[in-house]
Length: 360
Image (cartoon, rainbow, N blue to C red; front, side):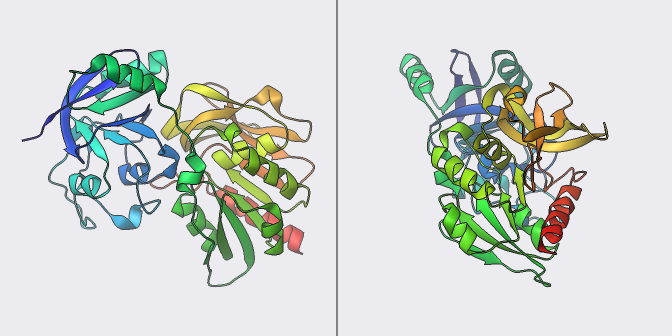
């Protein structure tokens, strides 16, 4: 029988549910994702570092655990909140169940609580901290702990430990992928397009990257407040002066903008899910995209060498930037998205064309 568990929010509200996964107390930043599929990709997305994730889709775990769908070597989130946890998964690719996976990953979970009501709290009051616990006896002390929580050293905690090369069959181009918390599928998308990809830690300096003589530089997604990465931003600024084709995604998009003098700001509750509309300002076409971010580039802060390429169809925030004085562009959403949508995968082809043009 599952043990009772409580989710205490920073504003003093609490929700009662049942425990699954690892049995441990934890504190984190509470966020929600509206994705209807891809819970394994959500669980293994490094961008959720330090966060407690609510799945708004009610049934989770129904197709079990499939390691080939993972986006990193291990989950980085603090806890996992669902409405209904499926205890009997059914899928021909299934290699395990969600409860066992969470236990082995030391991630606590909660189910059988009203995730709709919980999500409404976050939408109304904004992102806030919370604590998963098993008693309400220390409520006052718990709330003090919750309010004091802050995500720190986010990129450093999820980046690669060392450089690693992923080779393609054709070896057409060389790409250096700076890992700020990269999802595996960014590398896969490049490799299948003929790129040999060298993944390097976020701390790699500009001179080291230049010595690799890459045809292009890929700036990955990742967690945390982008403006805190002052050394990374400084190295990116140096790299940009060499006019190497550059493509940034999510945190990489934000860091590239910061390196050019733009600013970023925290959103009320962020964009997380697989149904976020992004409008291409050149064609006026709207793409449905996968997103996972709590910060955004401030449109009005973009420098003269930067033009907005996409905006969010819901709130008008910046979703992409094109640079006019260097072969570089970036997007806030995820064109590499697994499990979808894949409507904007063509942006990888744009990056390939940019590298080939410079090389020739």
